[in-house]
Amino acid sequence: MDPDRAHVVVTPAITPEALILRIVGDVDADTSEAVQAGCRAAVAAMPPPTLVIVDLLAVGLLSAAAVRLFLQFTTTCSAKGLQVYLVAAPGSMPLRILTLTGLSVPIFPTVNDAFGAGHG
Image 1: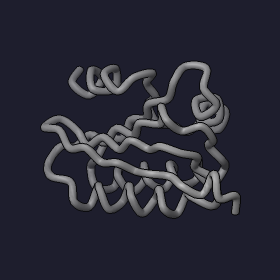
Image 2: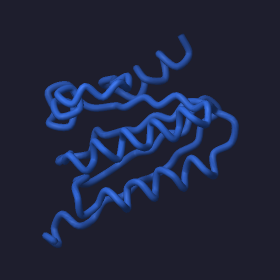
Image 3: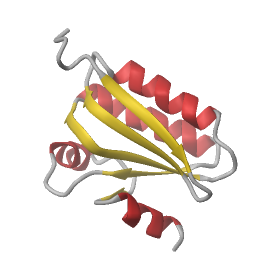
């Protein structure tokens, strides 16, 4: 494991409208379990909002393990009645990877855009 890439942080923020999960770092085979644990713990502690926004704006690397993570996470959330939106910067590597995989989750360029779609 490359020690420079071994660190990833999931920071939850709960608003009246949504749970925002901001992920900072590279999400790969070495870090995907930590990201998954952080996301699941935040959702388990989440009060009534039914929207989960996963902010990938500070993610540099998104591996196949990360795509599997988001697929499992969105499936788990859906089973609980939660809608998941992803946020990835236009032209970014995470957006390209997510688009290529055909992950059927709405992806927005900003957190504000995701909020707007959640209220529309």
